[in-house]
Image (tube, rainbow, N blue to C red; front, side):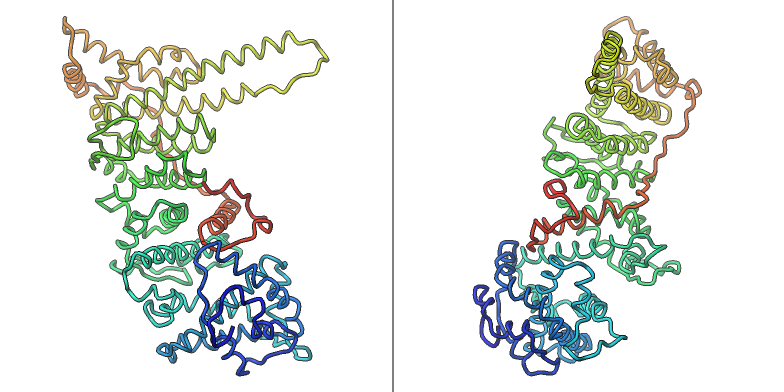
Length: 585
């Protein structure tokens, strides 16, 4: 490096880098720094180029890790950066392109050395690299160079104005406002890096009682820049942001895990943003991308599916949301392939996709918690089901029929297993058998939940759902076997009451009826049906509760996203936090 342009292949033999990583100390005021930092290098933009860079400088970084305890040059480099960063923040050098470029180069060198330290040293040794002093010099007890460095990075990101000279350099010209196709791709890359950094910062030290995480506090408490001043907050750090722009950006970019995860954190943790989302009249903008994620579950990883579903569950806790989604009409859904549906309510489509997710989970993932959260979302919405599309009611009852078939099969398998156990000789080796009893217990919980969802709709919204009554009448035999089952008979009584009432209504005409005539009779009968005839059950209300130690899930998940999506290179053999191949689809 130096005053000339540099290429990656030349870095390993660069004399300035060799001196930096050598044993001789260089003071922070030495003219050497101007020489070292006056280089031009095409900064890597993807994982492959970053790998070439790191392989080229690995020997240099190794020398730094060894010699720094004698030279203290790593600390000197960091101090040079801190001095320049402070001047940039004070706007004293923001128009000096050479000064900005050298500051950026200093940061680029520090980044690559730090990354080598992180991958090859323990946490204790990494911190010692920041504390190392030239031989014979005494460590400044009041200096915390690592903390100062991290603080300076955050302050630059937060305080330096975008399109300033620094941002133009740091984004390789992307902040100039030129809208070429290449720049647009790189702008998206910059946005993704920003999301990943935010997720890393806010998901560490999540237990507020032990360690204060100001980034997490800020994310959980910031407010709309267009809104009125809110109640005083106890957060140590907070800010205001344009909620409509944020909402639009999240909705338009919910194709990947990191955007979905950020939306989850905002809706779950920031009551201001959650309230804003629930007040939208264009809820389809946020719900449709989530449904598309669930619909294409086979192409997504389990974490992404789970986050999308939890967002729906949190939204479904609000009655106004459950009503509003049935007031929005969706037409011509290009990604929904099972059946051509020219028009359907957003609520109906939501129910349809969640049912499909349950069926997908039954055959592919077999995740009990995914089942539970799917059914919880439907249960929360069930009392507000409104004019469900015929295809939606068919899929709901088909799901129940599918569960009944699975129940019958498990019961038979359990009987066969008991018979075989009875015939086995005492003292013979027992083969490992599936736990049919446990499987049956879990399945009966699911069946009970589906019946409760149907019952909730009949109890609270019978007159709004003639298509559901029609489908129940058409498939009434599927409920018959559970009339005397101790787990289901109480709730089956309500279904039987409704079926009996409408069956009697339809028997009055002495002729064959068309579908439209049947629906007309159902609608008329629904207006006359007295809800008091149905047994009362507790209202279905489920609330999402995060695990006691959420970081055990989120920290590996977030870092797996960094590994797969940041365009940085990480040595796979060094990764211990998560298992490669299981966290990214």
